[in-house]
Image (tube, rainbow, N blue to C red; front, side, top):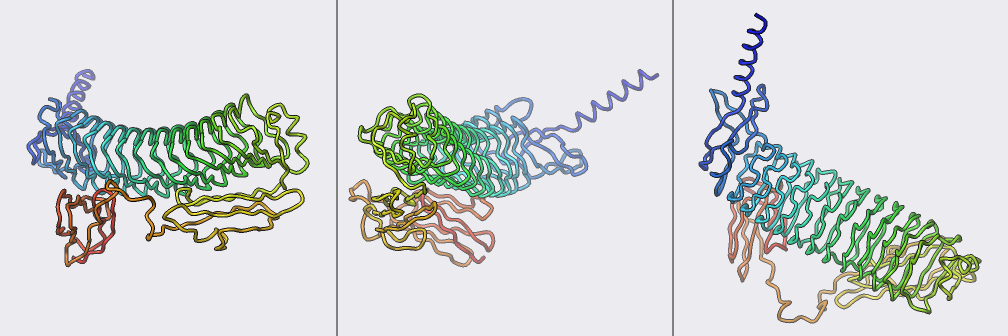
Length: 527
């Protein structure tokens, strides 16, 4: 009797399990498979049917709800591998009810050409849209998203711009690795604490990145091979560690502002950053890893802090133009083998008062022959952006004098405005009695072109954007591409090669208008 009861119970369980899954045809004609995820809240997840993905062609509209056996269920999630490899899908229309897109949901859906994520989605899983290399233009991650998985947008090689959710706390490993068409500067949101391993690896057209004050760690290879990153990289004060090869081969970076919490610069972190001219390592760093700045071939000035105790092998090899080293440590930092290999014979090494003998008798530092003494006060003079203007110290503090002389020189198309202490004199001589940083600020001079303008430099003017009752008007004297998003990041309009567009808005509020993939404007519209 017990055996019969057990078999009967098992049959009932199997029937119940089967009843939890069903197929239904959606409005765009495809058959979708549903699994009940909550019987109390009547929620289901969605995926391809068991028969396969052959009918997944063209646009797919996922419904917000589906009815089965008299019950109506809300569609809240895309299952793991839901539409994996459906490479003939060209568009996904999500309902607002979706809150999670799970691992590999749209992996290798190479036919997708655009992506408008649902506004209330909070979770995007590992490899969710990896290798969707047909996606073009901007990718907007809605602000409700709290987690984006590893490799979620790996090798989405045609995305040109990225707006991240303000609710994420980390960028996982490989998330945007191989997004080779990403060109516009990326702003990392202010809640992010960690930028993961190779998260922007070989985004070789990425022109800039803004790092937030919340950031504490930049992991291995995070921006490796981002050869178009330019200007001065500002490392926030909260960052304690820069991982191995984090900015390796970022050829066009012209300067680095290190934060005040940094303790270690790891292996090859800035190797191959050949446009950097000056390096001011902050007074918190104790260790510089092997090859950390190898092949920074235009480096001329190097400042090492009093906190530094060790420099790894070949850290400054391949820096043939290095002409001045200032080391503020009374005790020579230990040098591994061949830290410096190619440098000018008359390079000057400044060391603290009374420590020349310690340096010249040290087995690592005795390769230098031209030493001078400086007062043991760290003076950092830096430019807010080396592309706008440069700075120079013409007289260092000495054991006899506490005066430092320095100046700021703007580049063509810019002018000097002030130093960080408010002084507006470009050339200064100051007495210093404690560690100090002078930062020069510059602004664009609109009356002078940055470079001589040739025919290839002429660009279309920015379209005129105005608000009318219930609509946004975009117009220009030549064709343009336009997109309009609401504040949740939902795309409500897209058009190409048009001279005039009227965009009807659904509600009163703020909208973001993006034209020609480079101009963005916020505009208030009254419905």
